[in-house]
Length: 84
Image (cartoon, rainbow, N blue to C red; front, side):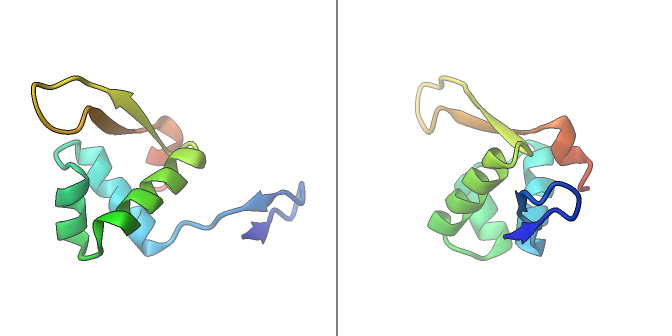
């Protein structure tokens, strides 16, 4: 992590992969497996990036119950849209 020059707090710089994931989350069309296939990295790494993005406040997860499949939806936040 890098330090903010103004407040000296740790900040994480967005990588190209995280920006690509943000773009796919913004479209609200893809689940984690589909994002993994589109970007070409494994499911576990996509999950880690999504956790990082959520921790940075750039996406949020909402629980949406379906009859089958994963009950989470990733939604880009207003702060996340600033990076696109």
